[in-house]
Amino acid sequence: MSEILNAIPRTALPFDLPFSVPMRALKPVTYGLMHLVVAITVAFTLTGSWKAALAIGLIEPAVQTIAYTLHERAWSHAPAASVDARASAR
Image (cartoon, rainbow, N blue to C red):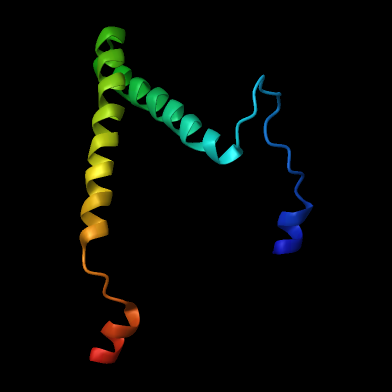
């Protein structure tokens, strides 16, 4: 499998950016843009209104980002029971 992955060319983008940005920094940006497009498209499909679609599409990702942050914080405080500990308890 690693031979196949190593054979894939490492072309990052089909165009050059005017500034240097690590690829790992571009991933959340492109994901955010994709999220906006999907949210606006779904909202337009449901409402038929571009105004409502843009309002929903811009608000929903912002709320989702806050919800995700709270979710991650809650999980980081959860007790970390390992699979081995649960297996040995049986």
